[in-house]
Length: 234
Image (cartoon, rainbow, N blue to C red):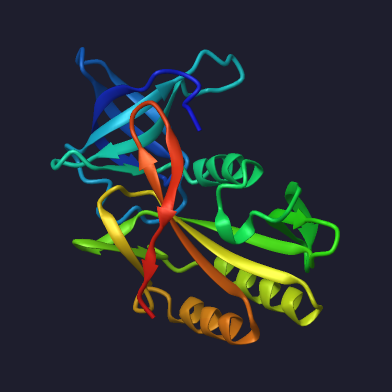
């Protein structure tokens, strides 16, 4: 998934009200960017962090910049826009690049199911059970090389696991796919200390037959694309 506009570097001044971030451009101008991330962004929002912003000229948008990336001191990147994984994954699914999901010819995003929920992707193919795929963006890393989810309590995420479990009991296939939006992590685990209820719901879903997939991403100021599978810590 290529960014619509070339990203520009900036320095983070502060993130506040979850969806706002004050930044300083290289020319010294201070601007407010939209932060498309409702999580805590633990470890990613310290003042002075180098960030990459996407400008826009859309008259319907009040803010003319969107915060897309954090660049770490070691040259690695983290993608902070939680809408990116679905766009990147859709392209990968349609191209058959996710080996475990490559047998499906129809990829339908945002399909209503369960109790007032929408599944990120419903995959369908004659002769195969419908496959419900929920996608989560992973940006937390508290130990070198280890990515974790979630970075804050997520009642919504817990609800989604329950919905996936119900799909399995109805004879469908259900997949919880974690997309690691960090280039500095090679393993993944749940942050059970941050949200024990989510960890319990995940264990229940797995026992019922919900599958877990974890994939890495390739990230640069030009694009974010799905990369290879990531090993998960039990």
